[in-house]
Length: 241
Image: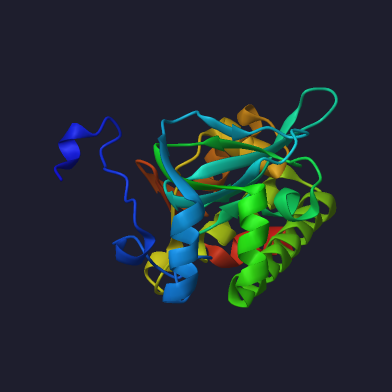
């Protein structure tokens, strides 16, 4: 089907077992029998940029399997200050902890770009986990991974005494996702300065100023939306690695 007919630039893929997007995601590499069972209970939906999938403190209605696009997960303080906990990528299951525990969603999930999402109602999802042990294991693995990531974020925010150190860690973490040594020195800045500030616990102005200081000190260079790390050792020293 020609993607030009889609308002989001792509056509949703309905069937998991023939999906060209399949990779090493949470559900993507399940057995054919498990994928067939998932196919029977999921609802495929596309969302525009800025769509809210669920809100913190809302009762869990189900899980959202992210197939395409990125989703911002955030939490808000009683004073209204937002902190982005992470950016979810394709293959992740959003709302997993709430769906399993039966407790309200602890975060708000909002799309950062057009997304394809497979929604599974909570009762169907729990039945699916009960009938497919491999899916239950994957759920436990993802919950463990998210717990570890949360601990790392708390360590970064709580033990880094300066915004410069937290921003340096943000850049190093982004560079570590490169596929090889050459790519590892580059960070594609897909978030706004305000969003980066919400991730590292500082203001947009501080992010902008600190990036400028890093550039003046020749720690980084910028080309459009790409940051090239020139002095990894200096950034690691800031972080305390």
